[in-house]
Amino acid sequence: MKSVVEEKREYTRLPKSFRVEIRKLAFPLNAHPAQFVESVDISVGGLRVECRGTFEAGDKVQVRIFIPSLNKFHPGFLKVFESATDQSMQAIGEVVRVEGGLRGSMLGIKFVDIDQDDWKALHLKIQSELRK
Image (tube, rainbow, N blue to C red; front, side, top):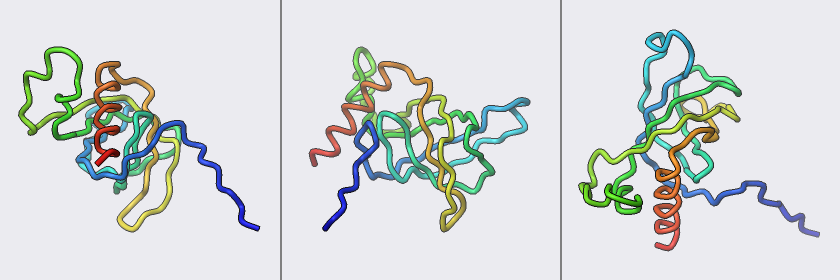
């Protein structure tokens, strides 16, 4: 008899690599330099990255995710700026999972503060990518 694995995630993940700038939110801020890493996957609820930094579950982080053509999905005036370069969104996240990876730690990061328009644009971008 096969066992059925139930998906517990609330949002669909897009397995795609985006450049991510991540910085631990702890004082003093300048004591925690930013790292550039690549995402493993992303959803509107958070993302997974592999990095060499020392992070623990519960750490708050600032992330800036560079997503080509994100502005195309952004409501309002940002659609005017359709250059695919340097389009990014920022969010505050919480590290909810830390696992060992091949090149460091695999971090599961849950978004805890994200601009509503950025959230909508990310949602539409993910849906568009999943339809390809």
